Image (cartoon, rainbow, N blue to C red; front, side):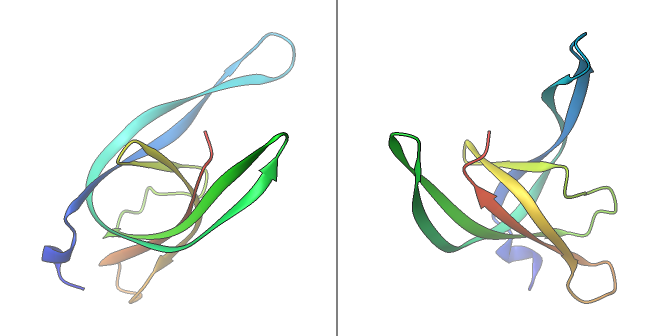
Length: 106
């Protein structure tokens, strides 16, 4: 994969947990970096979610390697929330990072 194929902009976000005073935490999201990416939609499906159908899509996002990306993070792409499922250093040389994501979370 060459750098010219990464034509999309995606923003990496990390969770910020704030104690809610009742033993839990409120979660907000903080931007970490905006990166160039290649995004490929792999599959889509609908499933019942209460009284409505919820659409979910599985995507693969390819970015330049970053050591600070974790599965706890998420990506924002074209106004969509992409939950990170898995990460893979595709050549083992820390050049490119393949991120398996699922759309639909908030």
